[in-house]
Length: 388
Ligand SMILES: NC(=O)c1ccc[n+]([C@@H]2O[C@H](COP(=O)([O-])OP(=O)(O)OC[C@H]3O[C@@H](n4cnc5c(N)ncnc54)[C@H](O)[C@@H]3O)[C@@H](O)[C@H]2O)c1
Ligand SMILES: O=c1ccn([C@@H]2O[C@H](COP(=O)(O)OP(=O)(O)O[C@H]3OC[C@](O)(CO)[C@H]3O)[C@@H](O)[C@H]2O)c(=O)[nH]1
Image (cartoon, rainbow, N blue to C red):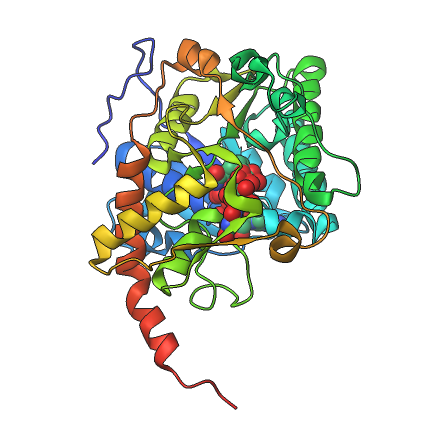
């Protein structure tokens, strides 16, 4: 239970605030709502079109926090109630977005509208009403590394100067326009620039978060169980689905791309520090990731296979992975970030935050959750005769 006397990083008592959280029903939103209800006295106006992932917080009405969370089923594309909610709140956290790579090249218009156009009124209402904004961008704004353009045998490829991603120094390197994969990153970059300009010209108090592959329970959906059977979620859910169904994990273009993965619960600690320490967070762009948890997608697949066998007690397949081309998996216009390691200087200096959980440990708790939540439903779905 939350105690009233929480202190910020400078030793001052934190005053309870009202937070308008847009996209509260998603993966990150659900974890942030949980944290705010369990550990703070802040109030949340939770805005989303869905609430399945936060239903456990909304019902029953006897929860000790039930008067501190309200769900508003609103599509921010067209709902005049949004400005009123932002005005009512001290802080707006905007998480709403289309953010699954399978959509970027196949639904580029929806992707650009969602990540840029739909975010515009949120920025405008915050700026006009002098309200603080924490906006969720992405590590994808960095695009590809400089390293990826160096010859394969160049010794410079080992030099962090050519791959470490720094908020205030790294360039944003995207592919050509027909590589529609970059529609998302480009829309996110433009909204970042707009927010930054609102800060510079109109005094908007903002913080921009660039998440580096946050993963954990409730991420996306399992196709055919709690999402469309033909849907393609992000890699954690794709691989979980393969493991649950005893199918080989599909490695796109050989699984050579590299990512750093951070446990959602570690990352949420960083967001809470931003919420509670406006003096240290305002005006900053923060990388939030775990530089120690780097793996190629192939290594991730191998580790998830090993961890799943441990937590499920089921033996792994003899051939646990299969190669697939990106064109076959994602369609025309896909492209990829080669490597994503966050520089941690700014978040360390401003908020003293560091991630704690190793890749093995975070996969162990996440796959335990996936097995408990989905294994039985998958068994039943597989056993059900297909309707003719
Ligand atoms: N999870 C990550 O590792 C990661 C990495 C980089 C960036 N991000 C960013 O963080 C944010 C949240 O990501 P997530 O992983 O929780 O995604 P998510 O898809 O689980 O959550 C997004 C939520 O926004 C809601 N939403 C979308 N459009 C809406 C609209 N028009 N009106 C109301 N609600 C709407 C969705 O219903 C969903 O619940 C996104 O902006 C995403 O780009 C996340
Ligand atoms: O079955 C699969 C699914 C994916 N891959 C490859 O894994 C890499 C990571 O994929 P994913 O996590 O789906 O997405 P990205 O990391 O590329 O992009 C996300 O990063 C942050 C965010 O902004 C929001 O989460 C989003 O854009 C990738 O290389 C896939 O090709 C696979 O091999 N097999």
